[in-house]
Length: 68
Ligand SMILES: [Zn+2]
Image (cartoon, rainbow, N blue to C red; front, side, top):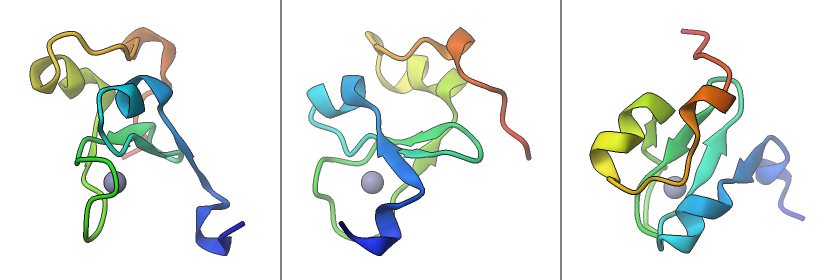
């Protein structure tokens, strides 16, 4: 287990789309870069996923609002 992964998890729906899908737990945002992308994750708020991924599997209503 990588120590730097202890506070993240993967959105399986986004992963099935071939995306990174890492979840930034404090904010609930998801990384929408390609799976195994180089460089840092690019986290997007679930409310914005519908625009980026028309058939987004993420239910934005089920996700806690961002704390920022
Ligand atoms: Zn990522």
